[in-house]
Image 1 (cartoon, rainbow, N blue to C red):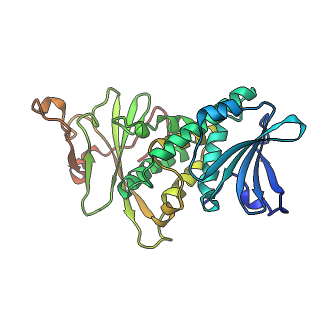
Image 2 (image 1 turned 90 degrees about the vertical axis):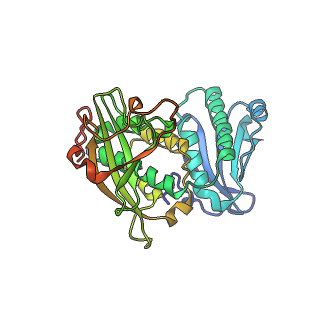
Image 3 (image 1 turned 30 degrees about the vertical axis):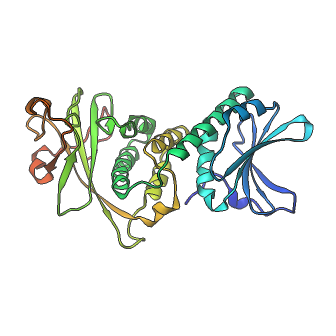
Length: 324
């Protein structure tokens, strides 16, 4: 997997020494990645004030990390975030990128430190609530949503931030993408022999906007690892199209859905094929609240794709390049 920081450029130093390299060079703060004689990785942040009181109050205890404070030369303080398990470097790299990207633009040291340490606390809560990697069903659904985002941004690079911000699936709203006058619901099917999309609620095909589209992808698992794309690869492909700020928004949303870059995702490869896009206009087969007897709740149903061919439509979003 690609890394955000150049860890491989760090040589093994002499005993009791560190090999260091500065990151975020345009920041007002001195931030380094480092490697010690034993091969342990860490992030070092030089500070002019002692953040010990805040550090103690937050009671940080993140699995596989050690966070401490030391006095350095010139009366400065060194915040040391050490990775305890080198096999988790990919995750450590990812965590640092997200947490530091959110605060390196600060000019005030107190605000920078407060934001960083509170971000670490939030990360601690996230790690404690995680239940491992996503299920294959959730992976397939996420792949379909990311593929749509990739397709749309590829033809509308100048609107990349607008597209990323419009992705609302992580917020568990009824539709996956909510634009100004249009919404797009993304559906994935795993078996081309059973071309049925699942509608998970009565509200999913109801929206108070001009147009509601359904985009369907076939996401099928590959037996040969070199024949398809993994979730990690798809995220990296999407990152290549984004600015730094949009990339950060993407990662925050990915965390909301429970995705954290993990090499286990590399073992699952999928082929992605666009089945079609449909406009849920008048006459589109769907259930509405008025057609359901009182007392019936949690309605979930399927729609046969072959029966909605007449509703096939290009997706046109507020001046963006259309998707077929």
